[in-house]
Image (cartoon, rainbow, N blue to C red; front, side, top):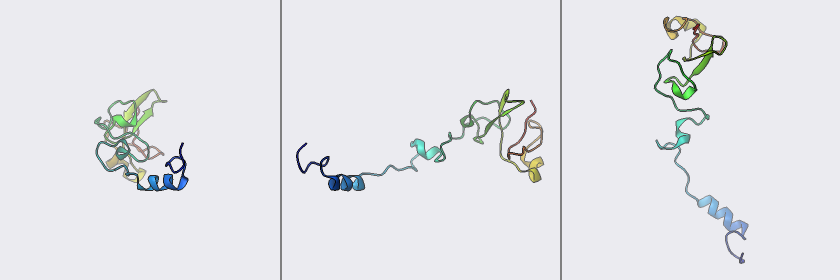
Length: 105
């Protein structure tokens, strides 16, 4: 390295880093724009459909039921509003203690 090159001068490196272009996280093609919490973007499967991962479901919630033998797309709910939040069928019409609709099969 030669004296004065950006790699040898920490002050120059800091200026270069400060003026570097910043990624646009709001752009549609950016993976980070899909979910900044680290989850997968919502998929197309409807409430009650079988699924493998959260990203399969329109609600973004794929959960295991029947001792983790069946995975279904579910959605958020509260015990107070479970009859409206969790249509029966396809769900059991109940809200779990973890805040999502329950399935028994």
